[in-house]
Length: 166
Image (cartoon, rainbow, N blue to C red; front, side):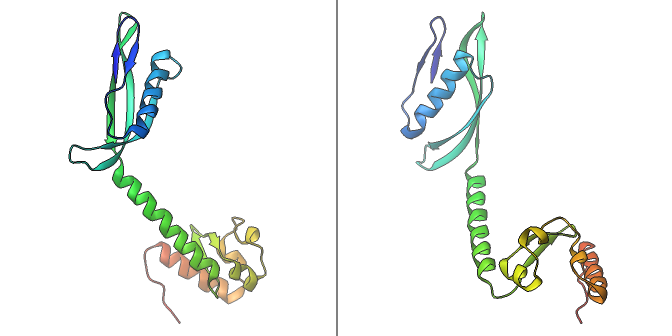
């Protein structure tokens, strides 16, 4: 893109990812018009080698005599981050499918509180999902000797030790 002084004019340069050109042009126009002061957006671009990558672009206007004369920008390759996010989403979907269809109770705790319970856990315990995830300490759901055993095992695990099995 090219911004010229005097009457501000934006001219797009040829793009090898034309579907993203309008987004870049609109972001720059908004900045020139003063409707936005900070602009960060994502674009796909093609490298010289022809590889498509996703970049996060952050820009700012350069002024001379109170008029915008140029755009300064930084583009950061976030392709790897996108791949990791996609893999995480797929992994979460697989886990959720497995856990929701498991024939056994599955509970996940963090810092002594339950953060996940499947429907079998609700059926076996008699508690609703809201009750299980209410924020009470996990051992408050268990009574007597089982409570003490659960509490000591969780504390050992939180200290990085493998709890003894009986």
